[in-house]
Image (cartoon, rainbow, N blue to C red; front, side, top):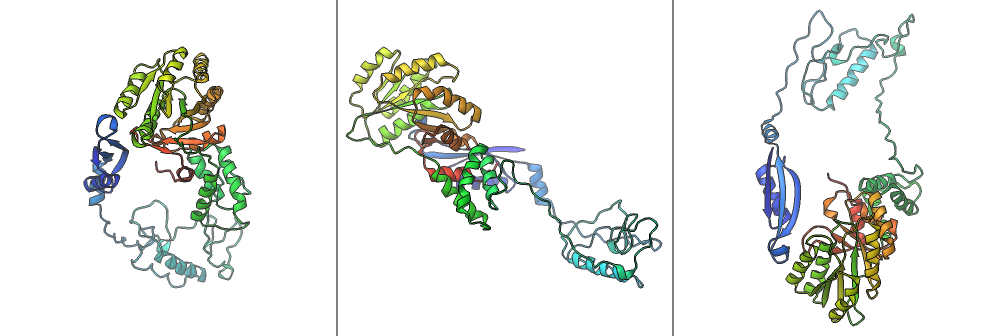
Length: 448
């Protein structure tokens, strides 16, 4: 196995370089987009692809050719069985004619075998241990007569006039509906349900989505799968509430507070918001942090503030907050970072409530990771509920192939989705939540 990193300005160029060097057998292990320069703010955008190829498999793929057709060995005159049990390959010689004097049933079956042989794909010839009859027909097991009927012990074999006509029966294995699907749904909706579950949407929420689709499908209608998923995307987008765009103008200043468990990316999300509204949109923005517990947290945010050119204050005690707010009286938007709290740390959560009570009309955003289990999300929501969060931010969507948390969090909390973080780049990998795009992500086919 050979592994190599390919870097290019765009994803398309990077993939072309992978194919040019590794060929079509290449396997892409990881991709990421980043910017060169300090904290990824000002450098050119680059795409990195980590790819691998099995060199032995590639050599075999390039050197393998179709094996030459093997001639069947001559039949043993003393035996009716041929040495090759498989039918001739497509385009090969037709099967031998039945011997003179064969019964009409045998002649009919031989003719049918010839018709089926012409439609069979080519197979390499090979030995077998199964006994074969003339012209490659498998030998009849004990208890079967020559006309294909079961011959009970002690009963005479049926004559040629009783031979049943040859019937080609196509047997299809019944595929049971996915677990949790409603058998009364119109055909095809079980695929929508299964797709949502595959994308880590909780089954009760997936059923709720599909139940809402039922009135949109006419009874007995057989819609193409593409049309069915188009209806599902439109319906699902209508179920995803999103927060209104943050508008900064002549009104009172806005105070955004980010809360959430440890390690979900609150500080990075705050830096992305600061870069967007302060650096790119040019609004007067100020940064405040209550995170004095995590080593280096305040220094990390201060570095971002210096790069963007924004004022930043560290508050060590609730009694210092009033003076801090007075120093930032000219800021139109205040972005407040908080310490990551374990949902089990009730004492620290109470301390955070004391800070929030001193802020003027704070808008609290709960930050959750798309990679956590549903049960952990539920526990975090229940613990942070007393802080009065009104909006959701989902991070690390790029780190999972099953972004069901985008829907699970919205439907469990009833809060709108405000922002989605899709990487570490500041400020690029951060977007305002769009219901149509979220619905498309949730119904996209997984490629793992």
